Length: 309
Image 1: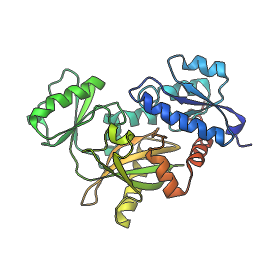
Image 2: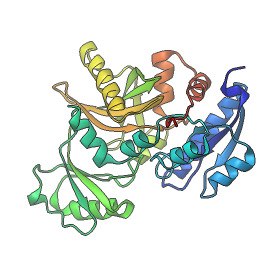
Image 3: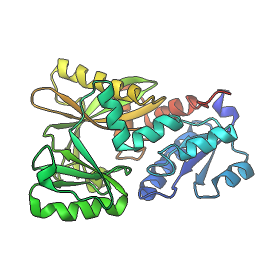
Image 4: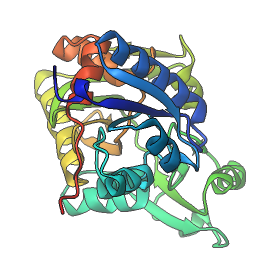
């Protein structure tokens, strides 16, 4: 019996973020896969009483299927470290960095990784397009949200106010970025190596919440339509971004690849979606020949504590 199959595994799902519904789907799929592979797994809705539930259930290892705040941002990872419960994915610092778009972009820049030029604003500060070092179109996004929640592409001055209001509804800090035109390419990282790059062609203007979670709203092309040199470059940039934040286990890195072959990193998802429409399972299947159940098992077996006393 493998190490994790000897333990009682809690699949942490749901949670308190704006991505709760997506997390419940990810968690349900992961839970079923673990059961099918012979794990002693139980589904746990991660609320504010999580510590008590983990103790009451006798959980010995955790598969984190949470998305967004309190789950993807290092909070749950810190709780699990404190309770000495091994868990899947990245540790506290990497999770927090990846979730915070300002600090992750600063980390990318310090490592020489391309990311869109940006300005950072806090609630209450005036945002004037005339003061920005780049013009329209531009992108407005909350600093700490996932699944493109609160993100807008702004083409003209009169639409900026509504975009700012939307972003500030989700966070007290926002980024205003230069719009980069390019192919939307996502790199899957498993066991700290790139396993493939998939191209997303959304029906909407960009790969927004609707395109991510509505069947038929985005075309997935694997492998991404890049020449061999650019394809390999995308894989290496994805791995570099994963490493720049100190991620571990697995992740999905979102890139924009321009006509000139430049790879701009949008973000690193330390807990990428694990639903039927999710991209990491598709990349793993087509790039590494792993079924969904095999992918879940591989991630589960990599569970560990990251803070060593």
